[in-house]
Amino acid sequence: MFYAAVEIRENPNLANVPMAVGGNSMLSTANYIARKYGVRSAMPGFVAKKLCPELIIVKHSSELYSEAGKIFKTILR
Figure: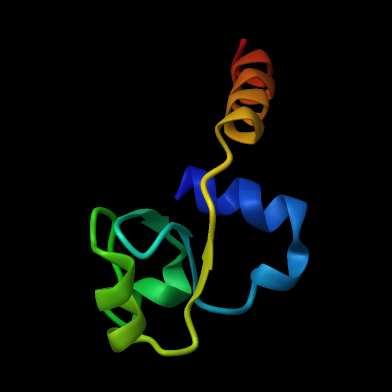
């Protein structure tokens, strides 16, 4: 759920709603709220929307995740 956590950090409004990162073709991850509806990683977004119509899908942001990963690695050192 790393990508989802980074997106929630950027937009706290996503913290209490079902959300996933990816697109209609494929999801990279989903938060725990969305997982309660059966939404999973590597699932097509259009299938996830059928399972959870209120699902918010956020587009993948590689640069943002890379920055957050560097911060996380620094903290672990």
